[in-house]
Length: 258
Image (cartoon, rainbow, N blue to C red; front, side, top):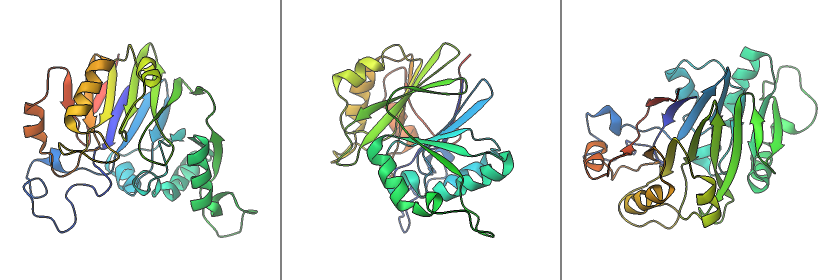
């Protein structure tokens, strides 16, 4: 299984528009963060988690030409507003792309992007061809086994994902305030765990760095990464304060699990 961090930033990205803070003007490329998204490949299958506003740029930046499925964590703008650009993969692959989401998130997707599923095709109108699939149990995307795990991220239904392929296991939870014991149990035995860590100060819908580290230690993956980072976190400074086995992710980071 191969993981590519397409984006590691929070909803406004980093740099933030109109901000001259040390992180936003930093020359360190690891402090430039597109909206959070993950590309997963295994056994000839490729899927992406979330299609934020930077989805098109992420696909171009990494020369991605294959997409077998999209898995959505929730329906906030920074995770869905690149949805329309899925249509390019319909053309490249001459295929309908399945989109997976839990019931509440799927309701929002079909409301926001109602033109995708509404009515018959219209000549000259170019829109995504999507097979909307509601998640009710673990499912398979080619070689990848996918399990949606609920977390608390405010009023919107939100999940993270456990991916399994080739004997390797990965957890991806970019937006999380709290995780119940049942979800923690589902994440035991992971090779890699990726978890929300917005900033040091408390937030009403996101984990702090300290709370994320504590939760990651209770999960106990072989390797863990912080993601969904805001401009209050300098990459190098944040990394210095982390315990062994937990690292700050950055855009373009690749993890190969053999």
